[in-house]
Each structure stands twice: as structure tokens, then as C-alpha cells.
Amino acid sequence: MTSRRHFLRTTALAANLVLGAMMPGAVLAQDKIKIGFSQGTMNHPWRVAMVEGNKKYAAEHYPDVDLIVTDGNNDASKQVADVESLIAQGIKVLMISPLTEQALTPVVKEAMDAGIKVVTLDRKVNTPVTVHVGGENLPLGIGAGEFLAKKLNGKGNIIELQGTAGASATIDRNKGFAEAIAKHPDMKVVASQNCDYTRDKAVKFMEDMVQRFGPGQIQAVYAHNDEMALGAIQVLEAAGRLNEVAVVGIDGQETAFEAVKQGKLAATFVYPFVAPEGIETAYKVAKGEEVPETITLPTVSVTPDNIADMIGKGF
Image (cartoon, rainbow, N blue to C red; front, side, top):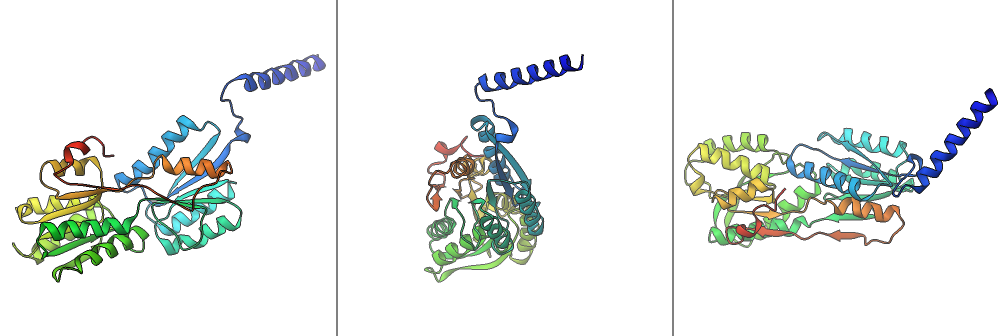
């Protein structure tokens, strides 16, 4: 009886293996490529779109991939721990959008030293990686500055709502804007604060600003992303002062496009959320394909002039 049960188990196992081999796209769990995706934060729509877009594409196109996603919860130490955990799980490729450059540099170097391929998305670190994928933030800052210079005829006081302190995107969006308005001596940033790319912090800061600066004392708000720009619009509308202030954002979310169409947002600049380009690139390096060190994704300005073509194309 025992030998018969053994025979039946062996036969069933063999049949399952044959069946698995015959099924198109069938991949055994142990044969899957482990790719870790460390997201710095999920506290606004752009980052949610990055994660969900890459997850969806991987599920639809890469049955041989085991994609493990972590959320740093806007805490650099938490993200470091996330990456260490991904390394311990034996990932072949690390996709990472680092919260800040300095804090995540050592653990990314650790991954590279361990032979793990690293694909940075959007933000960078201060150590060599396999490939960086994202848009260019410096030109976006320059574009925003040039747009406002033209709109304000080279004269005006500006509130700047910056992103997360120490993030490469924040540094470049600030630097580019400063370079652009430096050409116009009568344009100046009169107040600035890091609002972490979040609407609630932007609202709180702007509420203070409309108290500090009376009617006619602010001509523009430059926000490092659309969520903060929409927060500024909310406050200015409540104060009855939106008609005297030009608000500019970055990212290209659908609610921002609607605000441009309604005449509330002067302009936004589309910044690609790196999906599906992130997982596409990670898969290529996992398969040993050659990729360039930097993959630059296109950006576009959205104003009342082209908003009709952009409605429905945001995230």
C-alpha cells in the first residue's frame, strides 16, 4: 500500500511538472526575477501614479517577475530599512525613487557593491548606479521662471513653495527658477518654504502668507508641484485674491489641467511619473541588456494655449 501511494504521488508530481511546462507563460515561483521597488513616499498622486503604473505594467507584461514594492512613508530612515530588507530578500534589481540624496546614498552603494543592479527613478543619489530614469528638473524650473517673467512683464513678488528639503528634484526646481528670474532685477522671491510636495503644508504656509502680504503685494506663486499649487489656489480663492496672483505648478495631474482650463492655474509643466519606463528599464537590466546610464523622459508646458489638447491626459 505504501509503495502504491508513493507511486501515485510521484506520478501526480510528474504530471504537474509536465502540465506546468506545457502552459504558456507558466513560471515557477523559484524561477521568477525578484525586482524590488522602493518608493520614498506615497503622500501625493504623482507618486501613487508611479507605483500603480509600474505595478500594472509588470503584472500585464512580465509574468516572470516578482515585483516587491515598499513605501518609505516620507521617512528617509524607513526607506533605508526598506532597501536593506529588499537586499536581504535576494532581489536582482533595485528600483528606487529616493526621498533624499544623502540619506539614501550609502544603502544604494551597498546594493551596487552586492552586485544588485540599481535603477533610480525621478530623484538621484550621490553614488554611481546602473541607470537613472526621469525627466530633467532644472529645465522645468527655468521654464517656470521664464513663463512668469513673460506673464508679469519682468516685475513682481513671488512666493515659492518648495518640495522636500534635500531631494534632487527640489534642488533643481529651485535652482532653475532662481537662474531664470535672476535675469529680471524687478522679480524676486519674497518668501519660500519647504512644503514637502503636499497640499496641506502648502495651504498652511499660504494662509500665513496672505496675512503677511496684503492685496497687491504678491504677484505670483511658484509651486514645485501641482498639489502645492492647488493648495495655494484654494487659499487665494478663499481670500478673494486669486485674480491678482499667477500660480504655476509642476507635474501635470488632471486636476491641475482642469484648473488651467478654468483659468485658476496659470500654467503647469508635465513631469513624467516614470511608468512604465521604470519597470521596463529594470526588466532590461535584469535580463542583461545594455541600457544608457541616463534615460531622459520628455516634459511639456501646459498653458491656456494648449490646454484643449491636454485635458484627459493627466494622471
